[in-house]
Amino acid sequence: MTARTRAATTLAARPRLGWVVDAQHDFMVPAERGGRLYVRNLGDAADEGAVRIERALARTVRWMGAHCAALVYTGDWHADDDREIDRVSPNFRDTYPAHCMGAGADPAERPGAELIPAVAPERPLAIVDRDASADDAERAAREAAAGTPVMIRKREFSVFEGQAQTDRFLAPLAEAIGARPEIVVCGVATDVCVKGAVDGFLDRDYAVTVVRDAVWGLGLVPDEELFADWARRGARVARLAELEAERARHAGARSA
Image (cartoon, rainbow, N blue to C red; front, side):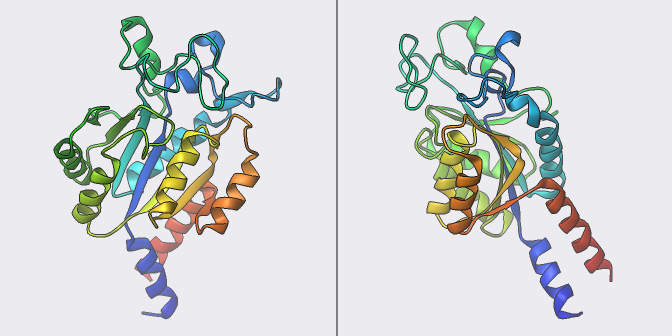
């Protein structure tokens, strides 16, 4: 086996964790079709918004299902007393109108918290709920390692600040899949909830890859600025086609 082949085999064998951020109805569906907080550039009236990435996002999730050791979705799962919910005067930076009210009192609002069909898994999700215990998180981690997709529900932008058990989920998952994984991230919004996830993983010294053609933002921070900052901190920013091509090369190296 050549040095190049050994390197390719090592990289290909490294476990990856697919991490899909907030691909929910209220974020991914334009307002005229019922999305309550559609992700689009707030400073650009011509921006088509998150519908631009729906196909890429669906393709990325399929790739994750085929090539990642586990697949995790996160989602805002709000109630009216969550501190980022302001039905009267949201500032669109720290507070937002009612959205993804999965824990709200009005059943008519709850469908906005569901995953869009393009990315929703065919099999039932294991749930780490808003008020999950450490035992709940560890049980979900074991299910994830066995092939069940997981949904982590959160109260706030960051999956680390808005869900108390995220770290308690990740540690046993790494143990179950045999190594600390590389996290492959996609979803919305790049400059809010995706940023919270990526920054949290980097703070914890995880290897991170952001799929740049499967994220969309609100225009609060330019994408290229975010990508450059994550790259400086050691993350990789790549298009899905690059990941697909790498996987094909690694498969070829193994058969050589």
